[in-house]
Length: 276
Image 1 (tube, helix red, strand yellow):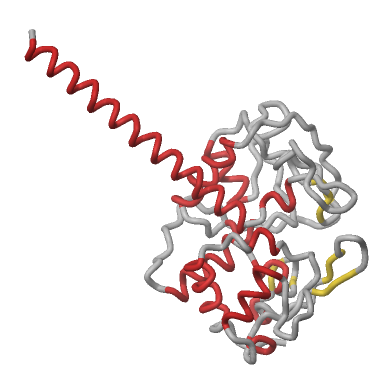
Image 2 (cartoon, helix red, strand yellow; image 1 turned 90 degrees about the horizontal axis):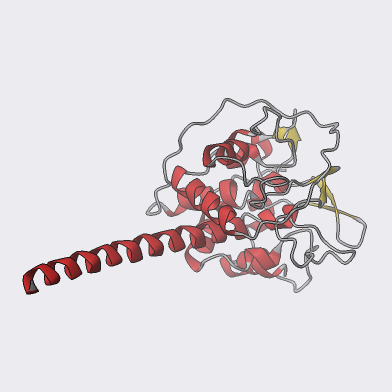
């Protein structure tokens, strides 16, 4: 009896450890997804804002914010008005391939051109995070768009970037996750112009009104800046001369960059050829 009891409790203890390990892995996945969504500024578009540009409380990722002439979608787990009824693969296809479950196209300004390169592991983390946020019932009207969506070949799987290669990992962070070059690269036929990568020139409406132009972030402008000055501009919106950048950029989100990821991003930016 004593041996049987010992064995039973040992099995129960082992199962408890397995359960705790699985929970820890799930929590780690969600936190990775939260980090990626933060530096990927998902809530900047998908959370409605008040007249001063502050996010509405209790409406995180619930959609309805006007971006590029459209209203952003509700991406909370609400089954009727959000993505709660979507499968994981359907969420991935919407982000990566720009296809909704009903076959409709996810339209610009959603950065499918960049998100299509998110690794499988990071996609799993983002999906886990989106599943974890509070469901908000908020039906968003789907407005007509004058900007045609660009058809791209569907992506099935993407390998994880090599973190030991600082430059390439920085490219992954800056282009794919934070999609810096979506705003900072001029467009040609609806897509970023690879010949003028990072050259700026796109116009945006500033918070509070007025138009601002995305600056050139190639070595044309940044060659004289130190790495620390580049980081200050990204995370605090402050130029080397102390002047401030327009708050179109989400400095508060970019301030959450890990030190390693920010180092890698700047290392990559140093390798982008000068362009005008």
